[in-house]
Amino acid sequence: MITLTTDNYEEQVLENDKPVLVEFWADWCGPCRMLGPVLEQIEAEHGLTIGKLDTDAHPEIMARYGVMAVPTMLLFENGEPVKQIVGAKPKRMLVAELGLA
Image (cartoon, rainbow, N blue to C red; front, side, top):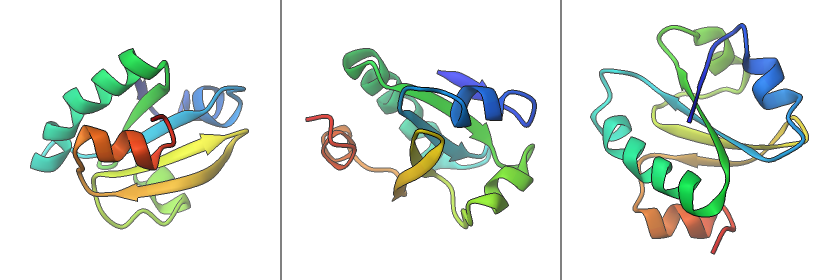
């Protein structure tokens, strides 16, 4: 997984020619910590690029997309958010919602 920051966000997400799933998370968020290993499995099994954005360190990016809760995941295609998933979910549900099944 890619660690996203204000310095690399545009290049890694907005300019990427492949779909990118961005997880908006925070260190203090228990569900976010539970979701991490699930996202790592999805990345390994489906080849989806996944980036993690610490909302406490980069609130301006969180605000840009109206993210109000963590964990929130936005799937980007061609630099645009095309799908939003709020909350930690089981792997099978995430795979289905992302259209990877």
